[in-house]
Length: 252
Image (tube, rainbow, N blue to C red):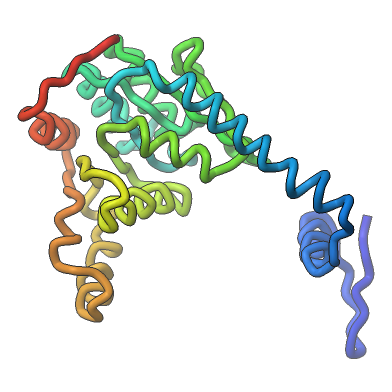
């Protein structure tokens, strides 16, 4: 199915995914009728509410957990995949469960490590047209499905005692920046955030210092909101050191 786009003497065929995008753009500039507003936009609120309720009810009893983030595209032979398995297993040994996005790649590695360590293994999946599917290492009863990224991110932040951030793409950056922003603005209390892979994260951290900091867009103390490590044991040690002064009651 294609559409011919004519304008200013140019004839262009739009096919496949481009056609779908074109249709979405055109619909966004079309005024909605009262019926469309009521049946779609207003009722969407209830679907969003149902995702929050289902998430809260399921996650309320999981106990202390650490979330592990990273690319869905990394394969089991990747050094970062293997490191994520190791980190997750070690995390369970100090009394935490593991939450991931529930999909393949680093998410699968996190759940696999938690599974091997005998800890809780939770997956918060998101409906996507590509990449995402449940991995086989999530505990039965702790696999949740979300349609909305923002609801899913609330679950990560609300029910995590720490973030381990492995190399990843835009989704990983989104989850990292969400946590940094909430801690920086005191919307939530501080918790440990660990970036794994100094070589991978080096360019971004240099930009933080040479652009954001030098232009006064962040404060110097904001650079202390996270720790960068290159070894699995160092990532876990940072989480442990943060909570050593607290009594963590584990219910796994």
